[in-house]
Length: 215
Image (cartoon, rainbow, N blue to C red; front, side, top):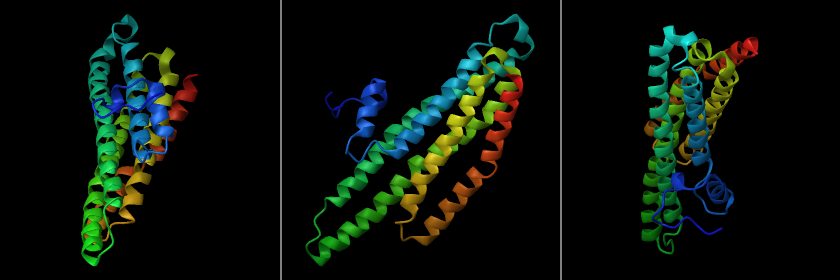
């Protein structure tokens, strides 16, 4: 199967083509894109539980809350897809810097400066993926508790996907921070990442425990 080309966003491609692109030797899409896809899957599963609940007489009392959760889940799914594209664009920029000439001291200095800027840009999409995945994970317990019990396992899978997306995004943040010399930037973004990740694994485990109790 051929390449996507320049005019088509990867998130508009068939799943098998996305995976072929991910498996290729090209630098992007890569781990950041995979993180975004995990988050999007989690959000989609939250919506699935919501849509299997809305309109059911048995769940009429919680329908307003479920609709609100679904609205958030839809927005977060679209956000993750947007961030996949942004991650590809950012890391394509890093790859372009690697191809810059480095024969002279001036060229080396220009390449170094460009790389530092590109790495900062590349840090932000996976950081935003972590943020989105955290928000998705926070929807999983309420949808598991209030949603259609016949789809409670899907709420558990949503939690697993969201937490995996968080962890995957965090790895992509950290690899970039490790190459950035601006220690103020590194410290700020690392603190933000740590704050986002705090308690999320515990939340995932609580969701899973609840889901298993209902199976």
